Length: 207
Image (tube, rainbow, N blue to C red; front, side, top):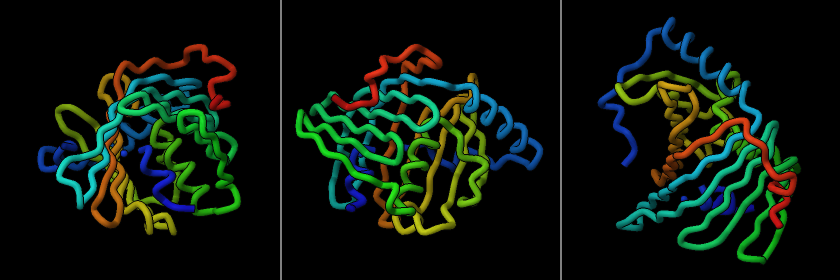
């Protein structure tokens, strides 16, 4: 299974020069607040704008659409611009609907991609801090609280670093930056977030 299938859909980030590392006590307090918020979220609906930065392209590939999440592991990325395309993560399977052309990939048979699947879901919900698979550092700026996760397991072949940018108001994830070993990265910004709303039961069937 090609990595592109999982990360092309995840297709200028905030500078850490303007941030400072949190002290131990401050980091613990922030983690507690973020974890409590993540655990309180049953559903999440948000619009997103995504930029895929690749070293061989002069401009990033920009896409946009809607993301829907429902605990414990249902996640829909619905792209509406510049094309119509949707991906559903559910029960360790990836369901792809490319303008009516449907396919399904079972990632549960591959532990590495199963971990990547969990990573994507955790990135959206902000529920990654108890994961022993990462080295985690906390930073703060005027605009965000940030968590920087460095993989320690086999997924580091595909992801060298994950940056999560949290709102200082409600402690939900506002931006995700996923950096690959090549230096290519995906930067996603969420907007118009709504939590714990009712979702259509057919949302995650990808029909």
